[in-house]
Image (cartoon, rainbow, N blue to C red):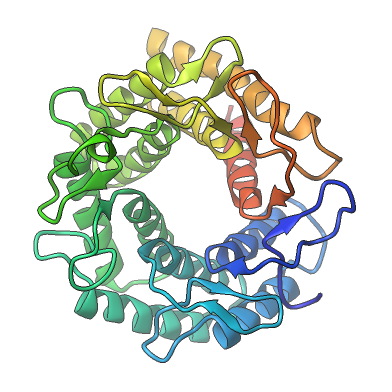
Length: 355
């Protein structure tokens, strides 16, 4: 159906599923089509992005200027709840429109300003970052902040408003001082209200894919700020992800480990492979000598890991979850994964052209 997107695509029928669509999926599709056009796709990317944005603002936007969690196939709200992760991707998608669709820029800038003001007024944490919900829903999470940093960096490229740079700095510093364990250098997922690790097992969770993804972002942020500490932290995050988070028998990054680096969840998802690739590229770009050669050697390994998910699906689609025995779960391809694939391809393309 033109003007909207599906949550997933059937590997059997190659048609979109009619399940509810999560808010994060639409901005990811907007990015994918616009970035695809920048990479050389000749389809009507701007028209598609504009139609998706129209649907998104018409169906997901709530009266308080935040975005609902999900919309059903019949365009009714299936989950009006607040999720910080969805708001981060809403900002990211608006930045893509502002960058690449001149006719939509003013509306995107205006809507992003309303959303970030609502988040700062209603959800901002007294120390730094954001609450998941008001007043005290637990746990607080590092993951949505990762994508909030990504969105802020995207807005820095298209806006002169200092808010975006300031907020990017705040989130990066929060990652360096709170999300990253000061002893091991690994990045945790879940936190108490004071940004200390959450109690029990949740507070011990570290995801290899997020070690890589944060490394990629901290290289970007640290490079733009001439912050050597961020680059040191990024290298350690990558080292942890590569040393402890990749299953040698399958050649893929798995889902989760504990803070002693023991395996917690051996399922390996597609997105973690794209983040491994992006981090290896980013660190190769800022390294020299034997260190650079080591990162360069990892790039084809990460590409091969990603290819496993593409080669075992119909052309143009992908698998998402690989079990510990190497078998893929038989399920529709999640549309949200296209963003990860396109972003990894974009990073690889830019790196290859610069060699």
